[in-house]
Image (cartoon, rainbow, N blue to C red; front, side):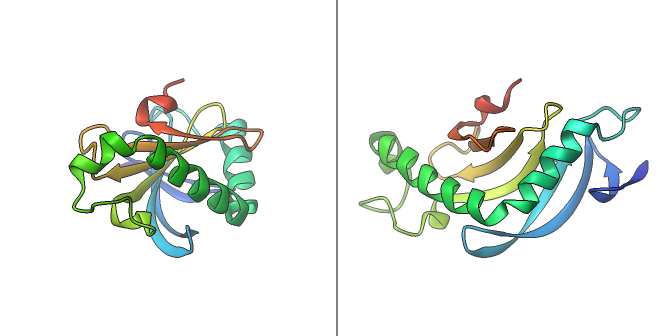
Amino acid sequence: MSSINDEALGLLTYNRGWTKEDVLKWWGHDMRLKIVVSAYENESVNVNQRQGYLSFKENLLNISDISLKKTKEYIQEMKNEVLPYINFDEIPDDILKIVKPSSILILESGSIGVLCDCSWDMEHGMAILISDKQKIDVGPQDILLE
């Protein structure tokens, strides 16, 4: 397997994108997440991706807090679709019982996607999109398509 040592992201190995694992404080918990840089093997990390990742890390606490709030709002909006697929009568306060962040995807534009597994859509999951202006959207993983 190919590997590179990026100045901002550190040691990355190629596996359908440049990848590594990292422990990040997300939603108040230390979580081991896969970091994936969207690129082909013959490409390195681009300037937008590097800047997006550095901005994400620098503002992680604030981004995490806002994304938790927006994720809870999204789940409440989807309540009628969510409840039949979870083992609860109501949406739990601890959304980690039904949503599990799994990967951080760094898109070519520098936007960041947090991919999540969720109890109500096992096939497609859920995503949080953080744009370069710190705008945060929550929805199905399709929101990450550029």
